[in-house]
Length: 234
Image 1 (spheres, rainbow, N blue to C red):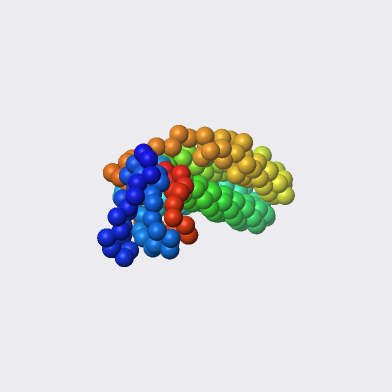
Image 2: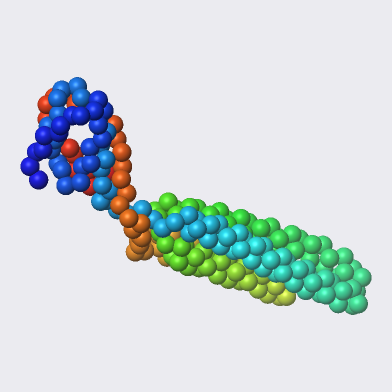
């Protein structure tokens, strides 16, 4: 549309810039621009963030429950093994009890570290997904994938520890193996080798448009002709 001349009927008029790119005003005139928002539509309503928060809370609770159950099972297995050894020889009981305590401590520490790392990664991923205005469905999928990873890691660590204890491997070896497993998993998850770290950069973003968004800005002309920028990128 061609440049339009504004009849300045008020001291500080409001200009509706729908379809207008150039306007003629007198030098020093102060006015307000009402610009139609035609850029990337805003994301959907507030309830989506509420859903994300609920999902995160539920996932954290589930992870904690899984960890508690795994630790209880491991302690029970070790206690049964110690009792069985006590029936055979009292000396073996003392040695087995000491080794069992070390193993239980190792398992508990490893599980706690894994859970903390995964929860931190999950929170960061969720925040990034929310920041880039991704749909809740995608956020939930990513969170579920992270939960599955942490459950698998915990199970693998527990199974490996129990096997090593069963074949009477030294505690040092058990600790080394567990640490290696945790380090590998953390590197894969955080580094993106397993796909999780890269997922947030390859998903398809989706937005919902809720009508025209008008952005208001106060402008003061320095000359007789105001050239508007590409306001569709505002």
